[in-house]
Length: 488
Ligand code: C2O
Ligand code: CU
Ligand code: CU
Image 1 (tube, protein in one colour):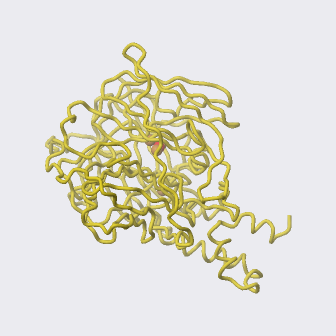
Image 2 (cartoon, helix red, strand yellow):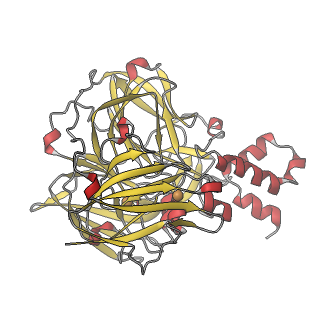
Image 3 (cartoon, helix red, strand yellow):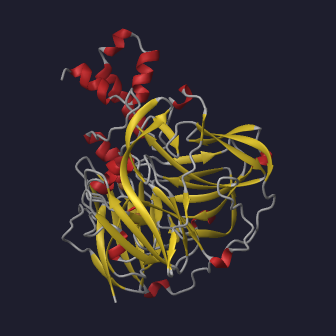
């Protein structure tokens, strides 16, 4: 293949677009340099920028994935998940080959109930192995979708669990060795709405598709024809795979109708490697839940930073928005909000949960140190890359420990969203101080910028082998992961 041809095939849609429209012919000669420089600029700002979204209109309505309640077989709630290939238009009129659960892109929302036996029948229709990991769910090794759980092409697998944890928005995605990043990038990600009866009188917006919306934010690199390919350069294995184009629920620049009053957005950062800073052009909004459930009280804010894997439920009062307004992500219009004449709730409850302050004697607990580092050679935890045959430490089921996590990436200036499987932890300290209010609830993923340190309190409630890792998926796949064992 000649050089120019291969370049144009690999060019992200955004650059190809820029090239067509903004660059004169002489610049084609320098494309390889040009591309490299643009990529560098993009990656050194970890709040990735999306300058090319403005080339597209807000003309398609936001996708609402089906909200599945499963079927009851006896006392067991049963769901079917088909992992499949499909075609999808991230950009109107441009078809891409994609992966999805029960459809061409993303996945359904599984509505689960706390304390209910749940069964998920998974069938893999892909031409490669996959697994399904339930991110944020407190489940044991057999249901976690990581160890010995590869589902080969055309094979099926059934997993069962019973979630005993707070009402929350969780999500599921693939987790096979060396294929997690590419499969997520091609579209595999679904949500879980876990409900707890104790909250049934909580007066929050909860009408799905009316005032309660799933918002999966991702960025991808699309080729000129709109297709999505997952290929990483050496640079991208270190810095993560970002893209020039931002999308919400798989659509570039969608619009969404919202009633007057309170609207709830369940936001998932489903990107491989981008931090997203969300705002409504300075309008205040409230965060009501973090990864693992409600915060004690709504936290007022005007912007919110979410790293890959993190979730936040936020409530915005559209009364203060213009008739046509926007959710901005890293300064780019990501979602157009169109106010309808309908009315939603007008008053947010002040008390949402009752998470107790941490009172136990921390000096009695053991402390485990995790040192995260990306160098030009690898991404490591405590200077080691992931080794399937090594178990870094063991804990007893029910035991608590302090995890002392440091981002010492040094020269590389990389953020690391640190994630623990099968647990919802509490944040004790961020850089030696009490964490901000929106990090005082339950979390399973926490962002550490360059030089930062966080201490978290982890109680392990399940059994078996499990993992912790950086949720910047290219870091995870190149070694920033470790495993530990929890036993009776
Ligand atoms: Cu969201 Cu180990 O994963
Ligand atoms: Cu996870
Ligand atoms: Cu990382």
